[in-house]
Length: 324
Image (cartoon, rainbow, N blue to C red; front, side, top):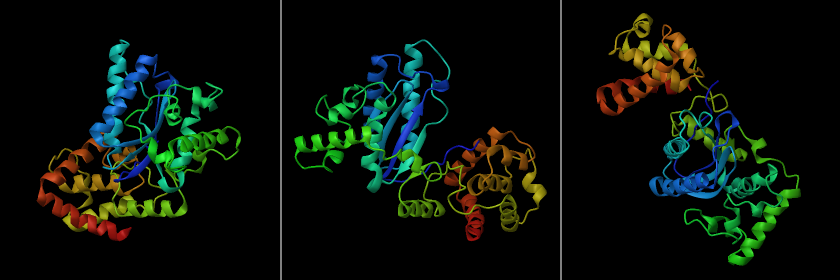
């Protein structure tokens, strides 16, 4: 199965979720939870992110965060890797703790920021862990209401200012807003996702699709089907053959480390088609599917280090983009 779409750009807002492997707990006790919150604080300092709210459940966590630097992947990789390293050392274990990659939903800030804070803060209540969401210790909600010490790295004012300029009034109104979610049948915002990874109105989705087609999003994307036309493998091969004046057999030839045509074709299969790694591997004479990502990563480095290779690549890329 293809990985979820990853879209990154400065100022993007995400609902990020990581779950325990095999639905197992990722927090054994309060010491683990405190450590995770310490890592969140360090994350804000290291990567310049803005956190609007969080909740730590038993076997997963939710974050609502903004990335002014467009660096979500670096943020989540560092956070999860740091926590797993701590957890395994403390509990004398090894192996995976988290279930695959994190899930990150790109959020329309203008329309869903407030609603998602409520959704996240109501998670313990919906899970039957508490009868009153304000009684749950391991979320940002209690601090929003003034019932717990505020974390300096959570942007409470951004949310509370939507209700009132007066602190006490804003807290009360926000509490009423969250409490309405206990009884209102407003639906789950997660049921409104577009392409499994975007939450927003039609205008927002159109903007994201435009960003994608202009290649201003993360190159990690592997699930493209709802974000504009993608190319067939034959179109990629044809563009490489035309630009580099080579035959198909040369592109598919294995064992030659300096086969630029092969490198470009493989990289573009990953970037511009619906094919997953296994399907791309099958096209290139049955290389192992893990080799696809490794070779793409190495070629991406070459593009930044070798201007001659980059110039040739850009010629092919120009032909490809004209087909989109």
